[in-house]
Image (cartoon, rainbow, N blue to C red; front, side):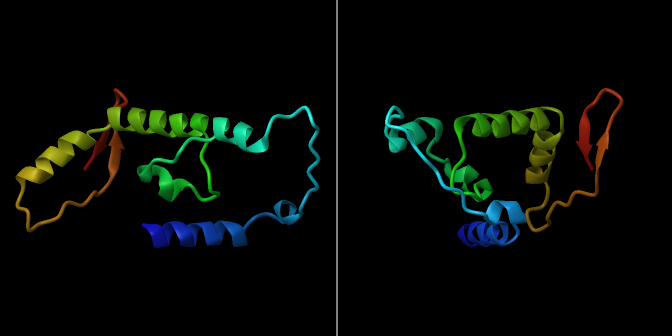
Length: 112
């Protein structure tokens, strides 16, 4: 995972839009609190599970909560847990594949 994360960071760095490569001059006033204190309050220590998605070096609390909410909604609207239980009961020498995801009329996503 570490190599994949590093490769993804390198890819993002190489493929930034032209406007993002222009360096801007940053001015600060004396009324602004210490930069380290301000940045620490906005950033959260990245969980090991989320490090592979962190291609720019930091994920703020708001974005982390958004990712977790989307994940929970997606898992609740699918039969993933049922499929996991079913695959554990099957022969361990075989592996499970997903042929497709169907959406029923009630909105339930079904992995087949």
